[in-house]
Amino acid sequence: LDLYDVVTALGSTLAKRTSRKKLRRDRDAVEEDDDEENLRDALITKMSTFGTRQTTNDNWIPVAETKVDRFEKYSRLYPEYGFVFFGDNGQGDLYSAERMCVSKYASKRMHKSFIHRVMPKGSESTLLSSLKKSERNAFWKENNIVFFDTYIGAAIEALESKLIPVRGLYRVAKRGVEEMETLLEDYPAFNFEEAVKHLNKDIDRANEKLAEHGMDPVDGILAY
Image: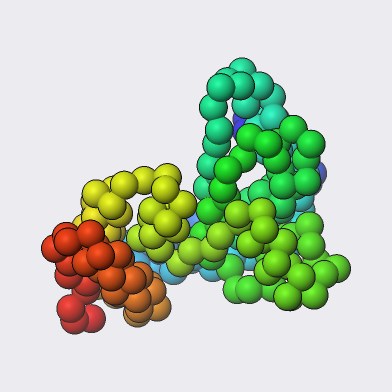
């Protein structure tokens, strides 16, 4: 999406600008301490809460509709291909995936949608808000919409759908652990406990798949 599309879809950006001004004031206050480490950790915390505040409403639905429209136009350029969709449940991507499933054209081209859980369940924008939980789950399963906590979990789903080979799962798992170790080293003041928990859980699942194919396991985060 270009800037014009986003502004048109979201309407007034006054609330966002106010939040950004507050973020800058917080940053300036920390800079007075002239401590680079404290500044970095403070900004990470502020950016995390800022992102949460901005993605907990249905203002993203027009953006989601635009994504569906853009996909339909783009996919028409490549009629010989099928597609997979990656998004998260924080900015209308789940709504986009659901809309593609009921679109006469897009539903024939989209093989699977992968939705990263970045928001608490029940707070995301969804086309199915009027349905019961069991009915939503049935719709997602029938239409190949899957949720994941880590990209290792997404790779497991892709393997089971025959979208990637087992070697691909191994590479994603290995890289996922390496990147988490880098984050733990670079940002020691940040609380990664929940993220490490999800990663290690999916590493265990990945190792089960690797063992089925006679491949060596991938070590998770051993201590945190």
